[in-house]
Image (spheres, rainbow, N blue to C red):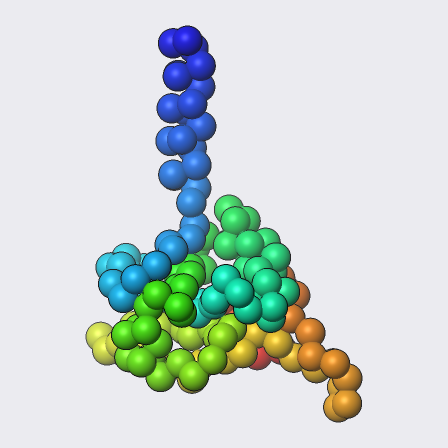
Length: 140
């Protein structure tokens, strides 16, 4: 039993060290310890949010990407004040929040879907597109 508890503690500690995502289920935005944060407003019921979630997880859970930003996933159904504060009108929406010259800068909210050509169906960004957006705001 002690061995099982020991392995559980090691696993728990390792998971907490490499956890790259902060999940917000209310209107309290956590202290952002890095100079750049990517805020992802979503809803559990939203089919477009569900389509983008694998891309989000691929980037957020990759240890190589942890230096890019703090990734904050915000449940829009329970964080109405944050939605209002950042002027978020719908989900899914990504927002970059960063420091520049000692001031907080909030970029224009973006929908993480794109078309490959006019008239094509919208598709969620792929992990490489999302990684570029998280790093420097580049849109696909």
